Image (tube, rainbow, N blue to C red; front, side, top):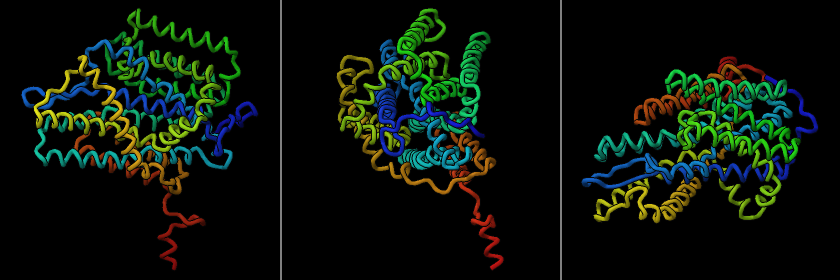
Length: 438
């Protein structure tokens, strides 16, 4: 898989050594924090009849709509993923790396911290069962933990296809993006016509791939070559179309509901995000270079996957501790969406961020450890991606339990093994062969 050679216009400025873009790094860090805040505010825990009850605090509420408009950052995250992946793939090609090597590196970056996290969560679920925690609560904990793992599978798929889609972008950028957008909208249309909601899960591929593809246009500076007026008009048109789909009943105004399964509304959100980023890029860049902003971005970007994988166990632990404390002390927990509940949210959210940061510091070594020698064999790398995706799908479909976590960890370990080369010496002879000859 190859892409066309970059022209001078595709050379993105490198404000930091190593080609880091401080504005993009800062925005990525904001997206990660936005995800933690969104999930934290959706945690609802009460005690009824001396038994803890865990629920989604946003179910059936009106407040989730404006909150989702502020904190639905996934479209921007995938655009940034496309931006960063495109430039990383380009740099690796310049240094002689292959598409397989790029994908193998992504497999290790994504699955290595996931193996560690899922293994510990599986062990924790087993310990809860042995400690006599009611089975239904253990099931709820496993289900809640597994929900955000859709991102791991989808992002792995998108990054695995990035070299191929980067090549397509080099040949026909507009047609490639248009095809992905058209496929996304076709799935929405087919879902609406048939009433089969399950068809919408096809957009786990098309919607997020389209948003990743959009990031390529930011990376090769196509967006920057458009006039400011054009970008303003496009952003305003996307926002207007989004509101029109809400009013017309095409899409729900709750942007969280539009993520499961993904809908074309997220493409419009991505267009608004992209327009805003391109228009305020210079200001974001200047702010991101301030010491505190730079320190924040550096902290989060070194631990992105660790934060994502561990924020839900932190939230579950906080919910469990709150319920246990209420049972012991007899104090009533505020009803979700009540005035008392809202007054307690600032402390709750700040605690969630602080504990997640602490856990990320403790476990980040797994994510930041240097990658091993990577496989260059397309067959091995494809096998690694398939094994990793299968493990994630297992957890999403069957839920995170002790057996499924065990199988998923085994599958991911196998994926990591496949993403490394078979035991070969520099001359191409296997180690076993050398030993036999000696």
